[in-house]
Length: 157
Image (cartoon, rainbow, N blue to C red; front, top):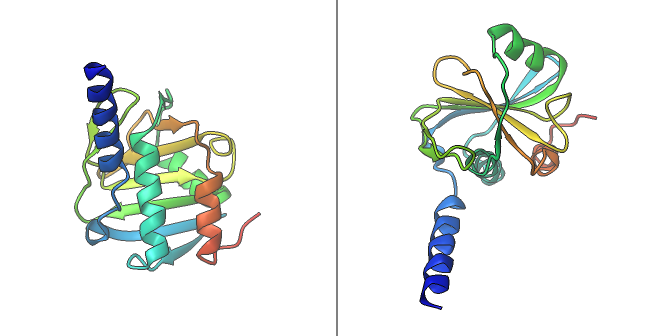
């Protein structure tokens, strides 16, 4: 019984830490790319805080690593032909990923909201100066993130 209570306590503590609101003072810019058109969102808006918080949480909860070589051309293609959300940080957040237990300190995240890397699975590209190979995936899907982006006034199919 004591062990069960200890495990439950540890899970609740992890949940409480993992769902903390994003620190927007570390965010430099939040942009949405709609088939080549970049739209910058106000990084201090309450809705943007929720969007950044959910993106960071999806990375923390990622359950798979996609074996994919990521080139600058890959990123440009996603930004030019799909709908994608990009978060750029002044100061990198510390995000521990469930899939492999690694702690990341990215300066940028890119999440496609449409296309082959979106839908029922969220693909999260991350990196410092450039995007790293091996984006993470989360089975939560992009639906909730896409809805939040639409609520911010960005229209896309």
